[in-house]
Length: 234
Image (tube, rainbow, N blue to C red):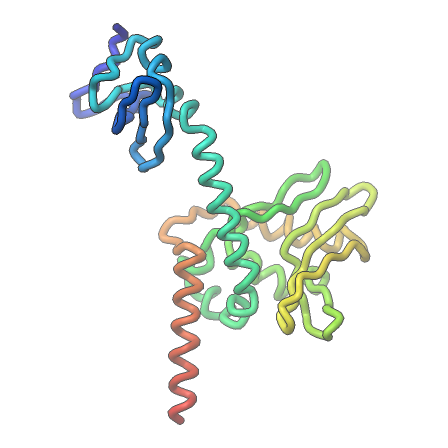
């Protein structure tokens, strides 16, 4: 047997962690990590390493646990990223309408926006910028705003291309009709450089105390409803 018993000291080894065994069958064990993620493995995965599968918990190297849950973690992150991307796209008009409110408070400014895909070949990606950075880009860099066929303005929300050739594609969302616009015209450097400049300024800022995008949107909707209600009464 390997010596992988739980460390009872006040300073447990940070390279080890507990994984619970919540269900046992002849051909499968259900493992649950500290964050609540679960997955099923064959008993031999543990017994071959000298671990006792009759225990409620096994104390294992963190690297093992990360390997066992790698697929589950990736799927969970992808689902969360997709959800955040959808929230962002559907509520851009609301976020822009409340720009001053968001920019006035650090915890709103630093709200992370994840799941977006945009970058430049040989330059790098500009993913996961805080919402305040997006608002700053759209406010001060006209090239990051496209025009919709309906006449409405459409902030660019994603792009990809090459800084060398200038070839690119981008996506924007119209604030007036809500249409998603695909485009590839114009000088690419005038589009991606603002993102590079603003991201460089804010990527070192900690997200401490930042609210989630979901909570921020709920707050803004509540704020808007309250203002509309007061306006109706007047």
